[in-house]
Image 1 (tube, helix red, strand yellow):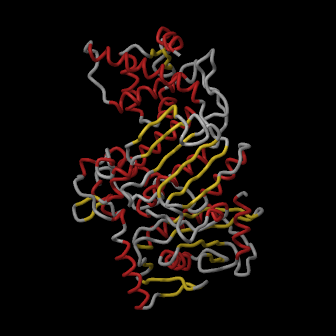
Image 2 (cartoon, helix red, strand yellow):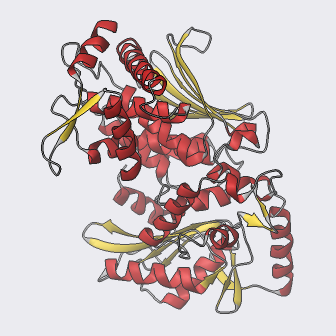
Image 3 (cartoon, rainbow, N blue to C red):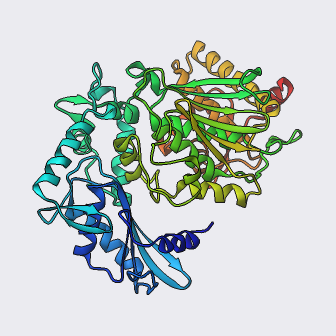
Amino acid sequence: MNDEQLIKNLIKQGESNHLEFKEVVRKEEVAKTICGFLNAEGGILLIGVMDDGKVMGIQHAETLVSELKKFLIQSISPEAPITVSTEFVGKKQLVLVKVWNGSKAPYVYDSNIYIRIGSQTRKATPNDISRLIVERQQSETHWERQLCLGIDIKDLDELEIRNTINDLKKFGRGKIFTEKQIIEFLSYYGLYQNGSLTNAAVVLFAKEPSRYLPQCRVRLTVFNGTKASDQFSYDRILEGNLFRNIEDILQFFEVNIALKSRFSDKKWKRLDIPFPRLALREGLMNALIHRDYSNISGSAIIAFYSDHLAMTNYGELPSELKPADLARNHLSLPRNPDIAHICFLRSWIEKIGRGTIKMIEDCEEKGLARPSWQSKSGVTTLTFPGITVTAKTNNAVNDAVNDAVNDAVNDAVKGGLIDAVSDAVSDALNDAVKSILTDDQGVSINQVMKSTGKSNATVKRYLQILKIVGLVEFKGSAKTGKYFINKKVLAKMKKKQ
């Protein structure tokens, strides 16, 4: 189902407490409606459609989207997750505005509070305002808003916070801060309150979140058979913050997922076979963003089997949603709105409530079966039929690479060539070597950056270490040269494999 069909289906539903049509863009009226949605259960506004569902279209929609997004961010307070996009029905362009229910109600526009009653938006009465205030007070005791004891600002990953601040500037989805305004940024988005960090801040930005919240851990496992009781060939516990864990798992997907071997037996060159990257990324994001962190025994498991991939997270779907609803346009009801909001600001979440539909489309486009959801017994499981890893081939490659890197680094440390490196750096060096192995024509710094998800400065540092220990060599000019695996090392790796 493409985007156009989704819009047509919405229009067929007609206006309701979650959906409204407007024929033209009037910023003030749009802001009132969005404010009403935020103070209720969220909703969708389609502009360019008459009340009876007739599609009229909007001229210069792209320009209006940019102006409207900026206006809504600036005029509605407090900060709210709002997406504004252009959509097509035939050759006619529409503007779609979508929000999930706000976690900081009451929301205000032009000094007034608006609420949604049926298909109408109106000013809130004193009783309505009292109700919204009580609901907000109750939400303030929500797990992600609770203060986490024993952690300080210095225990946060400052680089990841700066990345978030820079993404705010890049995508313009919220209030902008400078890289030096870390406290101000955290405070504004509710992650730092009364001199203490919240649980959400720990999940998002802590260097070692599992020290404070053990339930942040994620298990990544490859089983040899079709069920969890079968022996596994790979088992790793990830203990990074949300962004670090997602990057590590996505990188594992890139290296290991295939319908057949990604590495030629004769040439250490990866065979690029399409797999549903978008679907897997969206599924992973959902599992880690919407999981129930409130239970200290809660878990998230990414498990590969011989015939499918399963992503399981603690916490069932909201009562308003059933698994079947995920295959069509639906309201987004995040369990962790503060965590989801930061991911939205960074564009890790795109169009609210459309991710699951995109997942289905991506799998079908790749010729794979549809993913399926199951939500019961306190957990939600997303299954991707036919998604597997080439455990035998890739484990041999991984083992050979890991041994070569570890041996070389250990020898260099003993010989005083480099200082001792941490396990995290050693893992990153392994990843850098694997990225270079994927192309026998050599790779550039930018290619290593893309493959590993590391910054330019970090990749340069890692490559320098790999050069010192003799694992890689640089050939060519300073501007166009590339990195290659040392031939002697490569021969040893292949022999070991």
